[in-house]
Each structure stands twice: as structure tokens, then as C-alpha cells.
Length: 265
Image (cartoon, rainbow, N blue to C red; front, side, top):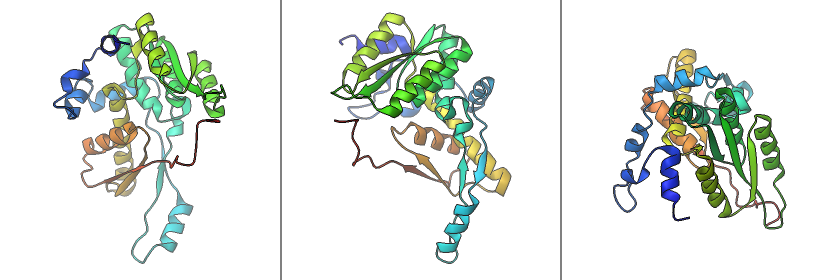
């Protein structure tokens, strides 16, 4: 679709091309500054819809096992941040909250997200709280029309929050349908990778820093973060830095998908 840049500009209100500084270089900090929300403002925005401020727990059995088996003088205290306590049940609520707030602020009537499910449920949940429409576009089916059961289930969760769900086969048609829906509806593009979504994740890092300091009087030595597209790692790391954790090691943990495939393909 030749109009894709025009559609993306209209649906986010941001011209990403101006952040290109070379053939492959990109002014990431410049892009993030365009979000226009400070960390304190994001915390306030998320608090309005019950997002964030999730509990952190020590995994005592794992901590004991690690200390029992580690070399003398080593062995970490292991804690887990319970992001399932967010509305819609995942950390994706943090990303959705700022996008939905910004869309409402700019006068958009609804939002569209492309997702396998968790983010769609988060956008649908937050949109419902703000009285906005929501369309979720999912890659569900393989070339033989067989759908991934877990993605189908997530689609039902999106519908439960009031979203319209469009389910497609894996491939380039998703991007085409996504653009066409943005153009036809005039909805906001609730992409995972806008600066609004990334800034929503920064609160996760700042919360971890604050909770560890409150419990143990020190910064976390390391934070292990799930890594798929990279937004969770990026946003959490930025939040840790903003909280002053300059020596905390950030580790991205990805699932090895080499032995898996999409449905029957």
C-alpha cells in the first residue's frame, strides 16, 4: 500500500522519518522525547486505571536452592514481580495505558492493535475504561486454516473486554488489513513500539528499583526481563536508569523457539 507512511502518520501523529540520522542510524532518544510524558506523569496516568504498583515477592525455595548449590560466597536472593496483578493480567497493561490515554487526549474515537493476544486484551481493557472503541488484529491461522489454540483463547479475552477481533492467517495480509482499518476508521495506532507504549513500561523498572530499596536498602544487582520484540527490556531498563540504578545488570531472557512451528505449518 503506497499510502502506508501517510496512514501511519495520521494514526499516531508522529513522523518517524525525522528521527532517521543515516541509512541505519536512528535517534531513539529524540523519538522517546516526543511522547511528552514524564515518569511521574505516566505513574499518574496508570494509577487512574489501576495499572502498575504490582507486588514483588521473594521466591524463598529457589533462593534456598541456589544458595545451597552455588559456590561458596555466591547465591542470589531471587524475587519475582507479579505483573499478573495488572488489569487484563499482564505487564502489557502498562504499554496500553499510555497509548489509550494519549488517544483519548487527542480526540481519537478508538484504537487498533496488531497482536497475538495479551497486548490486545490490555488495549481492549484500557480502551473500555476510557470509553473508546477497540479493534484487535490477530495472526491466528496457518496456511491450512488451523488456528493456534492459545491465540484463539486470547481473542476471546479481547472480545470479553468489548473489542472487535479480526483473525487472519500468518503473513503479509495482516499489515495490509491493519493499514486499511486504520485508514477506514481513523483510529489511533496502538503499536507496541510507539514511544507511548515504551514509556508505559518504564514504570516497571522504577517500581522494581523502589521496592528493592525499600525491602533491602540497596539497588537490585540484576534484573532478568522477558524478551521478545525488545520493548519490555528497553522500557524496564530505561525505568531502572531513571530511578538511578546505574550499576544494575539488565538481562534479556528469550524463549528458544527453534523447535516450534505455527500450528501445522
